[in-house]
Image (cartoon, rainbow, N blue to C red; front, side, top):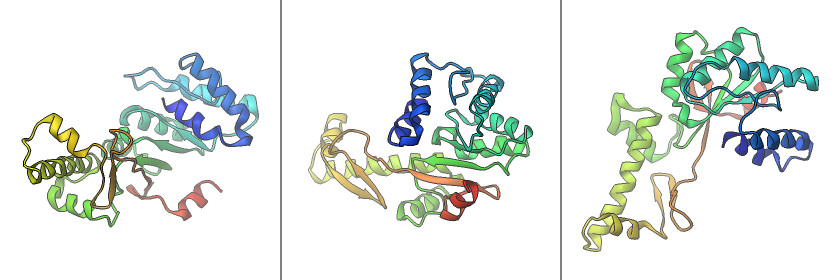
Length: 230
């Protein structure tokens, strides 16, 4: 799914035609190394050497260098792969998905003394330095337990309360079917995040882009984009 996501993004870029073709081949082969600009590791392991070698082979074959390496993995293998790449003096910028868990990801990087890694991480909740009301509410409610994972749980809790309050206002019993009916087709604000159930059941399409700066996750700034990708 990660490769498909990258492919979809590059499909609109005329200069990326050859890369898109290579990604199509990887997708059809169900995750093969040494086929294109993709490195694959065995799931539920930490061993990424073959994936790293695959990226290096692609660089050599195309007489080019990777700038951004998109990782689709949980925190431990992603952080270990980045650490290994740093040890090989790769100048790559990395990106990671929210499933990598920002706090756990940082713990692994700290263990290997790799917190100077250039990492972009997408989040499905607002950045910790956001001024959104729901972030401030989450900080107050969660205290020392505040983090990206706990904040996501807090937002889900607020969503449930919103639905329950609608049921109480309509004098309806709290049941799963009543709850689904109460929010289906609605669109509302939840402390700065738009919840939209008019087209599907996903609710939120919110994405925050954060970067690892001085050992902390902060909102990605234009200056960081310019410096890392100059």
